[in-house]
Image 1 (cartoon, rainbow, N blue to C red):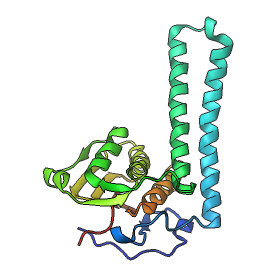
Image 2: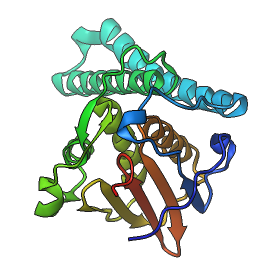
Image 3: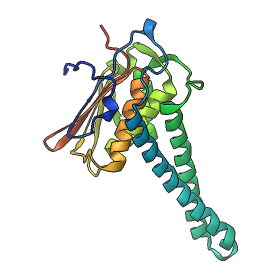
Image 4: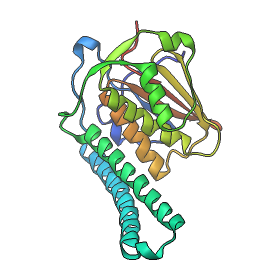
Length: 235
């Protein structure tokens, strides 16, 4: 298994997501676990909020357009068109709810956090299922009893964001958990400077970092490799 690098300084979010992103938070032991340890720097916070506002506006524009058309011309539209518009409304409403989860996780007051013992294989499988991603977990890793203290909903959210960012590229994504708490993904080389993917990767890092998990993304030739350590390193 690849050795993990030492932590980056606290202004990590100012760093560009380029061909190699080594995003290593300070590790906490279960006894030391605490609410989010770092806030976004001013520049990174402004960039995050700007990107989040853009995502909200896009979803709201789709919602408004579909709902207004339904309201004005419902009796003129055939069933197939109504079904399509209803699908748009449902999909974009879910997207807005997802964005609210992200905003709360990254910039909320932590009042909704529910910390419990999280089983890495279980939460990773749930996140993969939510993004229709096939995740290979051998029996040994699946049955491993190692757990770590975190908010399972937020760990799952961070992984969902990550899976969506990686799987949005054409081609096959290989996702494995070879040992308990260590997740790897391999995909065709991704454009890490593409705006929406950049936003997603930074968001995934922030959410996972706040729950004591570690994320590394890097391009190696014609592949993008992702490594996630869920919880503190096991001794």
